[in-house]
Length: 126
Image: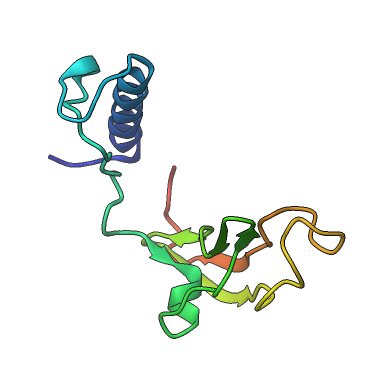
C-alpha cells in the first residue's frame, strides 16, 4: 500500500494512543491490553528514511554531548532529515561543559543544536 503523510500520521497516532492506553492501564509486557499487544516499542512510519544532520555533515559522527546532568552525559538530541531535505552546515555544541548543566552559561541540561536545512525538491507537500 502507498503511504501518504496523512496515513503515516494516523498510523503513528494510533500506535502512540494504544501504547499510552496500555501504560495507563498498567499493562505488563506480553499482555494484550489496549490492543497494544505488550510491545515495548512503536515503529515509526519513517523508519529507515531518517538521517541525522550531524552524522551526514560530520563524517558519520554525532556531537559528543547534547545533554549533561548528574546521571548522564551524552547525545540525546538530533535533527532528522528525510528525502527532499538536506543540511548545509551544523553548529557544533561545546565539547564538554565546565561542570554539570544547567549553569549560568547554559540555562538547560541540554545544549543547542542547530542546522541550516533546505529543501532539495521544490514540490514537497505536507
